Each structure stands twice: as structure tokens, then as C-alpha cells.
Length: 397
Image 1 (cartoon, rainbow, N blue to C red):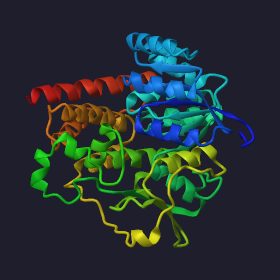
Image 2: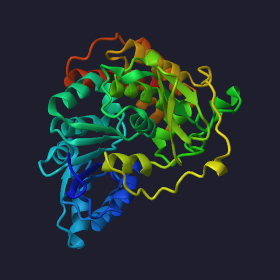
Image 3: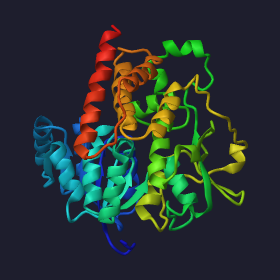
Image 4: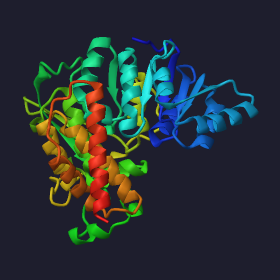
């Protein structure tokens, strides 16, 4: 275990996204603990360049050769020695490099699977914010972690809350007296609007989350509650539970981040202000605690906490995810791929909000569920599901 007296070398995959920016905010508060080894960004070259200027990483990774040229030129003009890599190969290199202790896996979507897997294979301490790694290739990913001895710490606020509420040294095979997990969800911006109005909501409305600051894709997933469905699948893998042992609970205030119910009747909950720097700081320093920059929760000002059951008529994507979780095999990978394509279609104005669930449902209908034997098989299922979903979107016009 890397102790507090040792400088930890950190790779941040997805540094320009909201999780990456929050991670750098925490890291900047602890220059005696963390050194940034590598940063990766997709298309926001100017922001990545500024991060490189501030944190002086050994490597920066971008999507393609063009972006690499632009970034290299900019860094060179500032006299920075950061080496610029590009593509999946570059991401995998900085995730598995010998010098690296910790990898923050915060690339959104299926694109994060390979570098996250590379970090796990290399036995790193992996801070998992990329839920697709487990949704798409859960068994493969968990087997890799087991084999390499990697440490896997969840960053999603819900999974991090569950991790904090479980007994120390929790063994999924033993269950440790856990009866079930209560996965909380805010219900997003459309929790109370009339069902008839859902067909006309805009991308900007869907991305206006009442409690959290997030990227556009995850904001839409939160509005459809697909995000909670993906989190349910992720929780099954992380904590060795069946879908029947996880309940989704609507909790509009986003103060309780999740709960664990024990066989003796106890329910443990983790509370805090809705700020991703809390789970990030928890995982970075685990098993210690460090300052995150997040203000303490004012329980008096919060005054009340509400709970309710999710309405699957309002949130059909949650129902689809629950079904895929129970079917297992390739179903979650298909669910995820179809959803990524459908959300993109909605954000581009090619689909209405309620069409997202329809595209996902129809893609799942056309798929014959099979066991996933290898990484290549996962990628093949992902590619095929995307093609089916794209065809369905095209035929809708």
C-alpha cells in the first residue's frame, strides 16, 4: 500500500472533463502527496495545454495526430518538456507505465474501456469513474483486477458511498451481513413534469441538473435515469450482488449518496454535499482521509430528506437497464452502446427525448444475448449494437 509519506504518481484519463477538473482541484491542495504523471484530453486542446502548464506532467495524450501536433506546438512555445502521445495506444501506455501508482479512469463511455483495463492489468490503484468498463465487460474486468492484484476504488458518488458503508475488508463471497443496497437517485430535472411534456424537452433542459455539475452525456443519462441503471449494473459487479439485492430510491436532495442495509436491521448511509471532490479525495487518499475543498454538510439548513420509488413509466430507461442486468451476458454492453448512440442523436437534435428509450429497447430486442468470452467479443457486440441503433435512428427520419 502506498503510504502518505510517499509521493504518488498519478495519471488522469479524461482530465478536461468534470471529474478530471475536480481531481486536479483536489491534487493541487496536496502537492506533497501527488505528482501528475500524465493527463489525457479528447478535443479541448486549449484547456489541456493550460493544465499541462500548471501541473507539468511527463506525458499528455490526445485523440489523434492533428490534435497532438497542435498541443505539441503550444507546449513547445511555452518551453514545456511534456511529451505528447495520441490515440488508444497512448492512453494505454500512460495507464500502465511502471512509474504510475494511481490511475483516475474518467473517460466517458466505451472509449474508456481499453485504457482502464490496461491500468487494471498493470496492477495499479484504479479510481473508477468510467462505469462502462464494468457495464460492458464486467466479468473480464473483475477477473483482470483479481489476477493482477490491482486496487479498485469506485468514484461514482453512489458506489463510493456504498464502499464507505460496507464493512472493512468486505468480501463479496461472504456478504458480511449485507442484506441489500439502496442506490439513491435525484430523479433529475424531469422528476415532476407532466409525462406529456417529455416528448418536447430540449437538450439544454435535459442537461440542467438540479444538484450536480456534470458533462452533457451523463446529464442526459441522469434525466432518463439510464445513469442509475448503469450504476445498478456496476454495483452488481463491484459488490458481488444480484440485481434483486439492489433497490433504486428517489432522493431529490442528493444528500444521502447511497445506503447499505444489514441483516440486523441497521441501515448505514453516507451523507455529504453533492460535490464529486468528496469521493475523489476519499479514493485518492484511501485508507486515509484528506482535505477535499468541499464544505461540510449543514444538516440543519438541509432540514429535510425525501424518498420515493422510481416511476418506470416516466423512466423507461431504468426498466430497460434492470432487465439487461438480470439477463446478464452481452445485454448490458448492448444497452450501453445503444444508449450512447441514442443520447448523441438527442443532443444533435435528431431524436426526441422519449425516443432515447425506444431506440435502446428496439436495439435490445434485435440482439440475441450471449456470454462474453473475450475483450474482442465485447468490442464486437459494442460495434454491432451501435450500427443497429444508428440504422434505427436513420429509419426514424
